[in-house]
Length: 196
Image 1 (cartoon, helix red, strand yellow):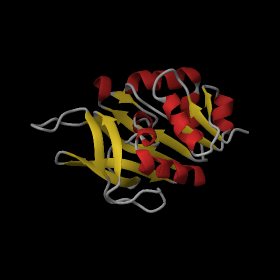
Image 2 (cartoon, one colour; image 1 turned 45 degrees about the vertical axis):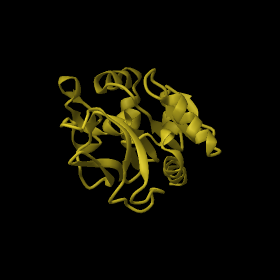
Image 3 (tube, helix red, strand yellow; image 1 turned 180 degrees about the vertical axis):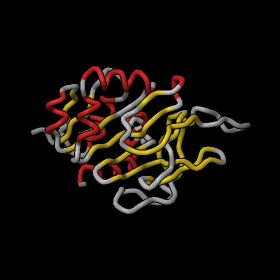
C-alpha cells in the first residue's frame, strides 16, 4: 500500500508538491492509477490550471469516482481544493466533484487589487489542527475562490473580500494557498496533513 499518492494528471504542480513532502521525510508516489489512488493512505490532488480541463482528465481516468469515494485523508491544493465543490464559474460554468456544497466564483478586481491574486496573504480565523496560526503568511496564486461554509478552516483577504484559505471536512482537507511555496507555514500545514 502506498502511504502518500499525488495525482499526476498532466497538469499542475505535482513535482514541486512532491518535493515539499520529501523535505518532510515522506516518500510520495506520483500516479494516475485508480488502484494506487484508492489504496493510498493519503491522497493529494494538486492543481494549477483550469477547472474544465482538470475535471475532464479526472473523468477520463476514472479518478473522479476514486476521489469522491475516499474516506482516508485527501488534500486538494489550489485548483484541487476548488474541484471538491459542486460547480465553478470558470470556463462558462463547470460541474465539479460535488463533495462540498457551493460554487467556486471569480475574484473581482478593483483599483489596487489585481486579479489573479498572486502573493503572500495573512491567515485569520484559523481552526485548530491545521498546523497554522492566525497571522501566518502563505503564498496564493488564484483568480477563483471557493464558497464559504462549515468546512472553512481558515480565511484570507483579497482587497475587501474574505475568502476560504483552507478547509477541513472530515478526512477532506483543502488549501487555496500553495503550501509547497509557503516556507515554514506551508511545511507545518503539510506535516499536519501527514499526521491526520
